[in-house]
Image 1 (cartoon, rainbow, N blue to C red):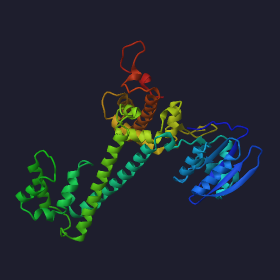
Image 2 (cartoon, rainbow, N blue to C red; image 1 turned 135 degrees about the vertical axis):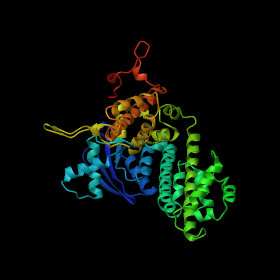
Image 3 (cartoon, one colour; image 1 turned 135 degrees about the horizontal axis):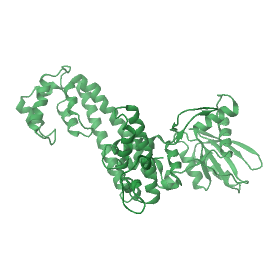
Image 4 (cartoon, rainbow, N blue to C red; image 1 turned 45 degrees about the horizontal axis):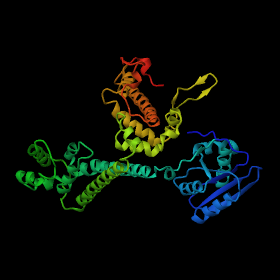
Amino acid sequence: MAASTQLMPDTVCVAIDIAKRYHDVLVRWPDGREKVLKMPNTRAGHDDLIHFLQQQHAPVLAVLEPTADFHRPLAYRLAQAGISVHLASSLAAARVREALYTSWDKHDRKDARVLMYLLTQGMTHPFHDPLREGYFDLQEISNTYQQIARARTRCQHSLVNHYLALYFPEMERYLSRSRAHWFCHFLLAFPTPASITALARESFVEAAWESVGRKVAKQQFLEGIYEAAQTSMGLPVVPDSPAVRTFQLQVKQYLSLTEQRQALEAMATTCMRDNKDFARLQTLPGVGPIIALMILAESGDLRRFSHHRQYLKFCGFNLAASQSGNTCSRYRLAKRGNARLRYAYWLAATVAVRMRDNSFHTKFDRYVGKDPTDGDLKRKGLTAVAVKMARVAHALIKHDVDYRGYHEYCIPGGGTSLPSRRAARTP
């Protein structure tokens, strides 16, 4: 969300270039005087800067460039002290630095002057601190969930593409679901074909009966695994060898990550039990608890976006083109916003288009109607559905209403009819 904040004539501007150990600070008074400070990134350094700014007896506006998470403690303490905090885009800072200095030369003091220029030109946006706004816990749960999910996926790929390929390739076809816990428990008990064929068929079925969980035709299922083990092309390693034990360590890690993910899902459900926005987002087709959590964690309070176009720009769903003279490129997504939000809406869109009786499914069908096998059309259709879902999510939260399917097709005055292409098109 771009800022159009106009500086007051008596505002003291502060530009802070963030680093891990020391921050470069540039202070500019309304009369043009400037002061350069080198501030250690410590509690004492923060206190000294805040005390100095509070002594000015004038409104203070500070701008920071987000650098990992090193800017968060300072930004929080400045806001707590009543100092307005803005953020500057790293991309904007890089472009302005090249424009002002016509060089790729970069250092901290120069960066502070670039930030000051962005602030005075109104090219910054207010900082909404998650801790002060009340959604810090949601953001941390969402971030941790994403990290665990990624680690779990890497572990799963390692199991399938390395360990199973070496020791028991035939078992991969039984891994049909990502939450198949029985698969890991079975591999802990029977990691190689040799550990299965060492038992008689009846003995194996009895020993593995509980580890595979509930199955239809379990007897036949286990006998199929036994036959696959007899004809396996895996390497003939000894079941108690160090190589197999490393395999089992990876299986245990996969189970541990799965349990952590389940714990986070339960934690998210508990924390959001009384959150009306959380429940309202789940009325959208394709949006479940985790995607709703990601949307709220990354967006904060959606009501702060007065128009849905501001929210689409925040997500990176706004359109952009390159025009010069009579030449103009095709419009495409800017992708300058929050990548995690785009990912969340994309996931929701892929689920919604597979569901029946919702306008998202209808919109996708219109996109791929010319050629349902065209992959490029499918990609464009999913993107359009994701954009529409972000717009609808903003409207639901802003107006405090639940999602109603085909609401845009209702005829004023009562009654409904089949939608036309023009009426259903999303701007």
